[in-house]
Image 1 (cartoon, rainbow, N blue to C red):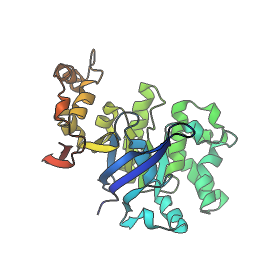
Image 2 (image 1 turned 45 degrees about the vertical axis):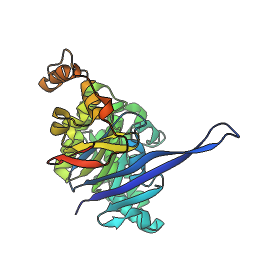
Image 3 (image 1 turned 120 degrees about the vertical axis):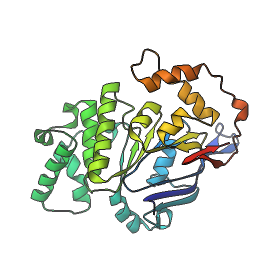
Image 4 (image 1 turned 180 degrees about the vertical axis):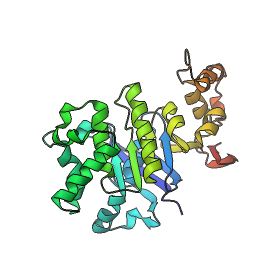
Length: 299
């Protein structure tokens, strides 16, 4: 049984044009379905506005879906009461793009990381202190970090603090919404490698949201490409990028910055870039169909 099984997810927003203008309904997420196995890193990739972050926020129930089902360990999260959802949320934690928005600047790191223990009344003060130290070690921060404030750390270190707090309750699923978008390239690689290491050590599943195909290739076991609220292609990264079937995926792969790269895979995209993309093949209403083993495309 999948750990997370999203079925026919829809999220609509009402947009009003001007103060007295007509209201229109926009489907930010339009019939999205995917499943994540225990211990798997699954990526949603696409341009800004494709619906991937809205999908993540629906999974977390930070916003309420319009339709569909979100099954976690066989339970439909949309059918749970507030108390039931509070208990399930211990097992689904999130890391967002900007750690500054989620780290209270008035609290020391020890208080920030211990916050989930306090909220859920877990352990004594001494127990909480020991677990905070272990969590900081897990994300490769020195024990002395616990007595400092977030402003005293680099952006990459602040994101590690956010990850430590997200791991406090030993979740089964981590939702990482553009967790490295605000970092420079070397720090991005460090955080991605950390998430991969945690996945192996803790048997942690991850829904990884990004617009960067290179990160998807580095971290994910499977990836889904989103466009205009729909999944247009889904496959393991090696298949997705070496043999993209949907014209949109082909365009994303061809647009990768491959010039002057030492990476053979990125150099290969330079050759693909010369290949014209035939958008006439794209049927925007097409449903996903299997085009190869484990490879699905909306054609």
